[in-house]
Length: 189
Image (tube, rainbow, N blue to C red):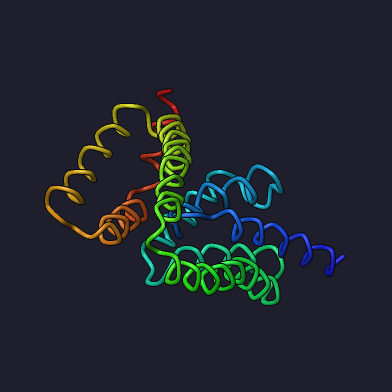
């Protein structure tokens, strides 16, 4: 059973590594698809919590999330397995593509290939944004969710506050709020 779990874990994160064009943030919807929807290793709320915490920690999200999820599913070996599976395609393809790109960079269609991926990644990120909006709206209500979007957007984009600091303050605030405040909100629904 352990070998089967490790094999499934490796293949899931290998798919993410192979299809994750655009870097770590572009992999988030793929991780969500494999981990939450396909294999059901995590619930949506757990995934959102892991994503929030991973964004506050240093380092690339493309290895933090697979590392933690691999650990949850398969222990220390699962952590190593998931991280290797997700970075192996990147290492191989980067080595190959950079060699080819440096040799043929003046050809127009080579340049166009990279630009063609951008709209696909944009749609994937929009879908993930809509999923998070739906979860936030159902948990907090649309007014609080919209207010948080406006405030955090203002802090991050207009005032230049680092997103990790904003997420950290929100996590501390959530920990500091008494549980009874959440129970009162549930009772009023």
